Length: 490
Image (cartoon, rainbow, N blue to C red; front, side):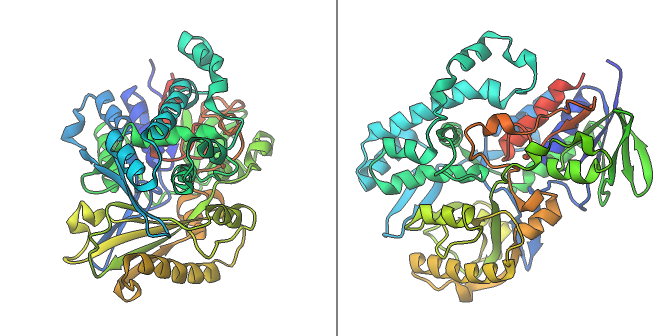
């Protein structure tokens, strides 16, 4: 196989993984990143003695990271380690109920039965359905390109296609969960998984009930050194394989020679390449980097509804709370109203569900002694010109009141440092159109088929990876997009 010069635009987790896979294949790889750091959303920062993982905080499917080391002939545990969580998440309900989502299936089923009165059989039936959806969709819809004939020319693919009616795409996630459980609190628990890819459980297909299987069956983990250890270890691996990273190096244009890839433009300089992989949001890839070629624009895809975004407060808290763990959720009393505010009104409701991640629970060095580093997030709409300053100010008050009430402590005076990330800064820092976290939403029953492919159908040797293209957002799927790109490249 002749060596090709590959340029990757963006050092997000998918771009790094693609660089590793192409380097393993023997290609010469350079990565150009606009920021001064790698990781995209999966980055970190320090403030006043607190360390914060800036973006994704839940780590599942670690085998996709391990696989990259194995492909390169390295033993994963020599470079990257993690531990499985015994409790995936703590849940707090407005009626005073607290729930621990144990990793052990039987222990969790008993917890549900004891607290909510739901029979263990109901939990097991839901898990069985989630597992069935995963088995049908995994190899065809997640690990392979939907836009390649060979994906379908094998018995496992045919078996999945013949079973596609079993993936529960014709009813909403919420309706499906209602059919399994009587307790509204448990329905709300499983509806929350729609937010894992920025969707609305009252609109998104029940196919998304595959997500609990990824967390509950495969488990949730904490990387040694925090989430940024994923980025750091993979960048080190890529460099060991000869990949060159260029930071503070925003690509201005993808250059075409006729209908073929020529390279990229950077500060007025042409850098030739045999193939280009864009890890930038597909919307910006076309509108910005390919602006001279509007005939290439896939307008239907670019005009699709975007996923939700996030408002994140990074708080240094001058106290430790034994009630809290690594992952914590504070639910509200009217979940549907929260999603109507986001999706119908384009705003933030007065009682949003709040997620609090505290990495210092597992990595004490992330906070000064006696303190905790809180990553406090709520789901919000994509940026369409809202008055974010006003929305943020009100949301901050509501979040502090909500958590203070549930913990029995006024947390406001305990906040000794603060940083904020909102849809505007998400867009500017990570080139995510409208600040959406996962590209397009999955509210349509055909969403999996409507995402942009990982290879251009019009420009040979132009590829796409990351959360805005197939198979979707989140660390596992972003890593799978890199695998699909690598499978395409000779």
